[in-house]
Amino acid sequence: MCNTEGMETTSNPNTIKTITAAFENFDKWETYGTCFKAIKNGTITLAEIQDIAYEVCEINDDIIQMRMVDMAKYAPRTPANDRLIVALGGQV
Image 1: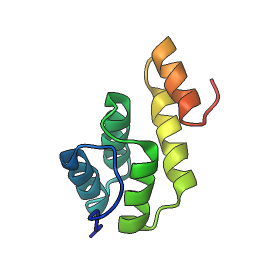
Image 2: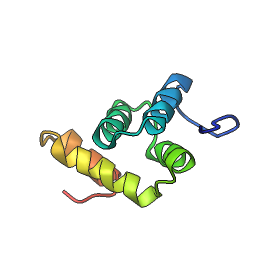
Image 3: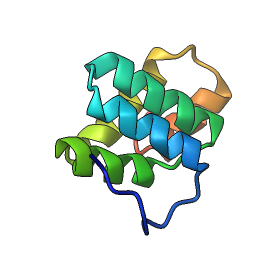
Image 4: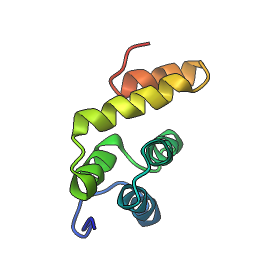
């Protein structure tokens, strides 16, 4: 289990708990979908998700970033989604 106590966050503690639970009960696309929705809603940062993913499942930062870019690319093309892809480190 991820110990988020003392971890510097910008997120709502409920979002941290939801993302932690998603990785504890890892189901590839369901977990990444939960993460993407939280990023898109602005309730958690990519860095926070990366920290949780590594602590719970030892998933490297670059994998999480790649999956979030993938999720953004699967979403309908809009200027907002294009900006999100770039913000996540992807290319439009």
